[in-house]
Image: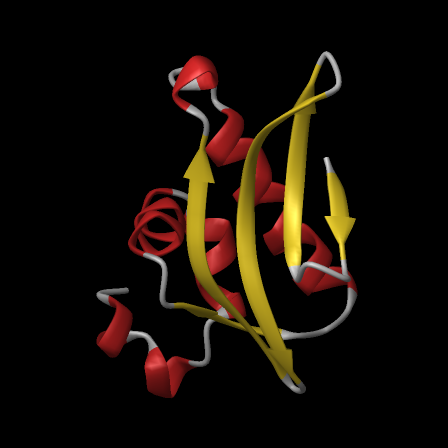
Length: 97
């Protein structure tokens, strides 16, 4: 996993090929996750979850609030309660959290 800041996305590679990415926008104090995509050749291998976990951990390290506009990110947070605190309490209902 790597943060490709020029492209504004976290990327996952498998054997040198781009397997997937999680796009974001940063406007401090928040990071907005806007889209997650995995190449069909790599679906079902947990790549999207790994990307989101890395992005959320990075947001935590950088003390950024998380705005999960991407439905996959919102769903991931709903299933992994340890990340709910990253979403501002006043915005959680909007994201179904």
